[in-house]
Image (tube, rainbow, N blue to C red):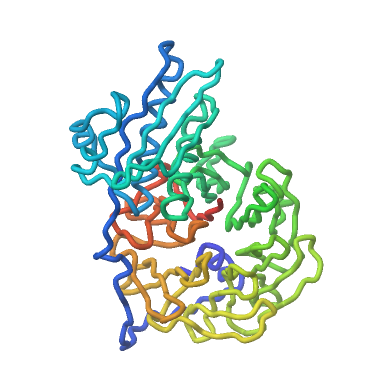
Amino acid sequence: MFTEAFFMLRALLLFFFICSFAVGQTHIWGQMFDTTFKKGKIAIPDFKLQDSTGKYDEAWSTINEVLKRDIQNSGYFDVLPETRINMIKSPFDGPIEFEEWGSIEAEHLVVGQVMDHDGVMRVEVRLFEVPTKKTILAKAFKSKPRLARKTAHIIADDIMKYLKNIQFATSKILFSKDSLVTQNKESRTLKELYIMDYDGFNQFPITAGGIAISPSAIRKDGQVLLSYCSYEKAFTINASYGIFLKDGLRAHPKKLFGRERYRASTPAISPDGRKIAFSASHNGNVDLWVMNLDGSDLLRITRHPAVDTNPSWAPGGNALLYTSDRTGAPQIYRMDADGLNNQRITYENPYNDSASWNPHYDYITYVSRFDNDFDIFVMDLKTSKNYRLTRRQGSNEDPCWSPDGERICFSSNRTGTWQLYVVNRTDADSLIQVTRTGNNRTPIWIQ
């Protein structure tokens, strides 16, 4: 694997050396998914609709559907099915009968309503703790019908923040999507960057007109700070390749790095938004470099005849993970942000790549080739124990963490095309497919 960008570099350098040998090893693997973990039970009866005009009907339906799906997708709760909820008296038909809700194993109850308030849609929500009969959360929102999905995501995040101190429903995923276009009877495959809700809805492009790959992004001062590799004037004789930066999704991109005789790829913005690490070929060798986002203080941080690529920042910005084939095949290494104290950290399989650091420092996720399959693994950095998350379902690549560190998004060709999937790191049953058309790769997850 070594990612799409690596193969581009390999072709440029006429470099091809990947070992596929079998090594006798003791595999220190565990079961990442906790089979003893018991999900909570939560009841979410349909919200009450207090509007006779019909203008909020669709929004009401969307809020009900999306909220239930978000809570289920958290991996921490089972939303009780309607067949069981319908056995209990509606919470809108008089006092709430908490004993009855407890009889169907509900530990929490969400009660809400959608209404018209002076011409504006108003959504009210209350969260009850069933055993204690207490209201533990109450919220009210003013919204618009066209923003029903967003409203449901906000409600879900408020509930999950209170119950589990996590938030994910309002997060976004950036990714690269292929599209085939025909112009003047000539067909071309474009690669553009898109952004979408975590569940795959509300996709829209953020680049246009050519090739854009290897996105890296953080949220800074309320804006998305995005870097990626692309061509200026793609498909022309004046095409110029480099790393580009957008300070805001609708901002005009500026070329950050694109020197002659250099081939840059795999950019990674530091968590504080002040620096960028990337790989670049120079004089036939691929090393890692770091510079400020204004292009100053360019520093080469690896100097090795091997290919060093795919940098990933530690959450505090003090260290980097990267891939190097200095032992003959790709492995994951760690080093300080200034290039010192290099340390190899993967040994289990002969081929490991594309590491991503969990926001809480405690885990990394990466891609490993085992039994001729590319699969997603997670390593516990405290114990060095490895967990295999996918198994023999096509190639599984490009893993990244959700901002809360609870979920992993990755690409897989298990359906015949490259699509994106999301899984809770402790619940295999939480796997959901979030894209379905085209080919979609290299996800980046931001809040």
